[in-house]
Every structure is written in structure tokens, then in C-alpha cells.
Length: 246
Image (cartoon, rainbow, N blue to C red; front, top):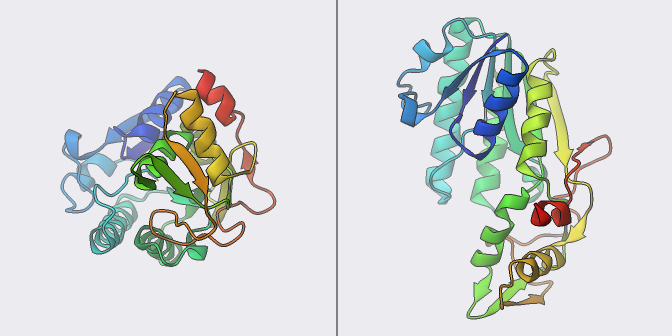
């Protein structure tokens, strides 16, 4: 199967490309560094020529509200148009579970807009909604740090290893399109403050984590299980403890 991975040089893209190649598929890893820019459209027609499947795991270089909305709207429109022209049979996009429940976040609003464009498009699709990655927990801690204190809400998260996300995407990419969404999540739901406390202790980071129900997640309030997957989610194998140990 001929598969193009948009964002192929990133955290998920590299692992996904390797998995698909190991399974015997022809894979093009496309990114601005390889001359393919989904936002401007540069190189898309050439990259998608002969592709049967396109997997979009690209991400905005800026999380500023207007910039991230522009990125996902423009790149998704260009990718869907190029995929339709190329006769792509399955468009797979990586999104974030619970995006529609965290409306104060410009990033999550942009992911909702991206999903809507895919759902309204002409190309058969599957949207894979993942929970937060283990690899991003330190960024959460850094944003929430004031001095030597990390202030976070006790809202539950169910983080997943990037390798498990890549494995789920590799499976979805070679299956028929759902024309709908599916979810992937880590093995266990744990309060966010506890997750970050565990991470910092493992890294021997001296910062103190304080549980504060009024604290925000990247500037957005989290109410209850907003970022927890629904029933039927695919569950990853790698717990945070296992990921830290590795």
C-alpha cells in the first residue's frame, strides 16, 4: 500500500513511518524539511501522486490562537483538496480526545475546526483522537510553573505513550475508512497533578506540585473528566511508570 505521512519528521511521524515500512508498505514521509508544506500547498501534488492513504500527524509550530487556527484550517483544506485530486482512498488524521469540551483553548478549537473540515470533505476518512502524550507532560509542568511551584488541577488525564499512538495509527491506516472517529488512550486515568508529581520525582526535579482545582491546563479550566476517552477506546500498553523506566 502506498501511504503518505504528513508530518513524517515529527515525534509520531517518525515512529509511524518506521512501523508502516516494517509492515512492507511504501511510505513517503512528507514535511517542510522534505519540501512538502501543507499550509502553502508546496509539493503536495507531487507527494500525493499515487497515494492510496494519507495520514496527517502534522502540528502547528505556534499555539497562539489565530496562528494555530490558521494552520489547521489551511493545511487541512489543502490536504483534502490534494487528496481528492490524487484519488486517495483513506484520509487519516490525528486529533485530540475531548477537544470539544475544552472550548477556552484556542488549540482545541482549532482541532475541532480541523475535524469538521474532514467530516465535511469528499475523501473517506478516519479521525483518531488520542489523549495527551507522556512526552508532553513536562511541557504541561513547565507552563504551570511559578517560581519553584507547579500549580495544577486534579482533573483526570489518561496519558498515552507516543509509540502506542503510532501503533494505533499504523493499524488504522491499512483498514477501511470509518468515516467517523475512534479513540486511543493510555492504560490508566490519573489526576493531572499526580501525574506531573510522579514525572518530576522520577526526573529528580525539585519543583513542588500543588493541587489547585482553580488552576488551568494551558490557560483553560478543566471540568471533571473533560479529557478522558469514552467507552470503546483502544488502550495503549505503556503506562507512565513503564515509560519513565525506559
